[in-house]
Amino acid sequence: MSFNQEFELLLRARYPLIYVPTREEERVEAAIARVAQAGNRSVYTWDFVEGYQGNPNDAGFARRNPLQALELVEKLPVSASAIFILRDFQRFLEDVAVARKLKNLTRLLKSQPKNLVILSPQITIPDDLSELLTVLDFPLPDFNEIKGELQNLLASTGASLGHRELDALVRSCQGLSMDRIRRVLARAIADHKAIQPDDIELILEEKRQSIRQTQILDFYPATEKISDIGGLDNLKDWLLRRGGAFSERARQYGLPHPRGLLLAGIQGTGKSLTAKAIAHHWHLPLLRLDVGRLFAGLVGESESRTRQMIQLAEALAPCVLWIDEIDKAFAGFDGRGDSGTTSRVFGTFITWMAEKTSPVFIVATANNIQALPPELLRRGRFDEIFFVGLPNQEERQEIFSVHLSRLRPHNLQSYDLERLAYETPDFSGAEIEQILIEAMHIGFSQNRDFTSDDILEAASQIVPLARTAKDQIEFLQAWAAAGKARMASRMSSQMMGGASFH
Image (cartoon, rainbow, N blue to C red; front, side):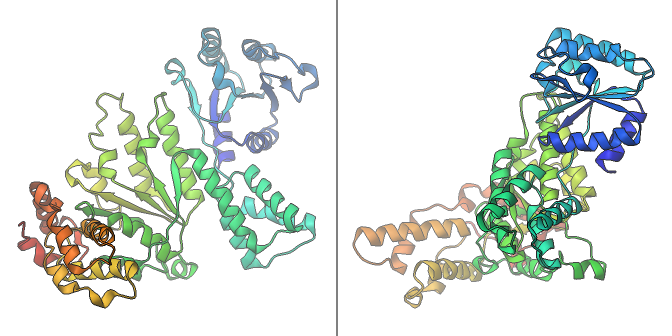
């Protein structure tokens, strides 16, 4: 259901107080005006500085007086259909007189065709008004709306773009507010007197800026390749088979959009690296979600941030949404001690995961599978759950090769990769990278290049996690061996039966 349809339904159902969290005042007011016109309703718009505007009889009324702004509702005839738009009114909701007046009006308006609409950049609702206010989200502009705006701008400049170039430009604008789209395109026109396909990079930079300002998602640069991952052959094959799953050809074939992956396993085994490589390989933007940022102190704000995150991710689709260490985010999610906020955020999140139809591919990583709620592991949330275990000897050799090819591409043959892999049992990929850095320090301090012996010396000084967290890792391996997850490595099944901890 679109915003206009849902808003019109709330008006007909006589919801007295509607709260619209948005930073796009001009656009939402235009949408409200269209609904009002279709329903033959008058619109009164108020702000603190100018008072009421747009109606000659009430111009300037209730300037700098929010309580008086509410009194206008009672001055109109009982049968008059009207919508009162109150800009930034959330700032006055803590005032006892304003709160009391809103409660009184709620009783009155149940029998009158009048509605109050509060416009606010974010949701800040006091506890005593939470039952009276109905929150209605206003979505970012969709594909067709952006396309229409671009076509109008192109017509005004006398320029034209091909169908493909125009669609690519529209997709690059998705996830931005209409004001930002107009601003960045005006910048492009000021720079070279026209809108060009090359302006996509300019739009992407604006998008990065916009996402940074939300302080919920990070626009993460993905430069890692699938070939940068050592081992994990089953997982790589699974990803490669789905490389074209976001294309229009896949839709025509009848394939649904891939939903996502949960990568569970031991720390430092390449789960986060895989998330970056997926985005790079599929040529999709990578958004990183820090779930901790969803939680805020004010009532209702955490839920609002969750909805904002979902709206932004869907507007940027197709994209990869990377949730690192999801186990830490929702550990103890039953809500004890936080008035159920964590439970509500979790409920909103997993419902979206199960019901989403947008091409947002979720890559979640987890180290402690015991901390994950059972609802998250249920089929339908993710396409697949992979267990990423410790690399075996063959995979360790591949990991050494990947790192040394990057560090010493012209001298790779001087390192005994087979011996290095054999002498580092139970080391994770992250630990192998660390011993290479330590070996480089050894060589650098002696004014020479580092050798295989330096690498082994560095390895002898590190106690791998497989030994310090033996019980936790054995539990993870037993969990995976019980068929709860698919093995990321082809050789993992052999390792499950006899992992060694020296």
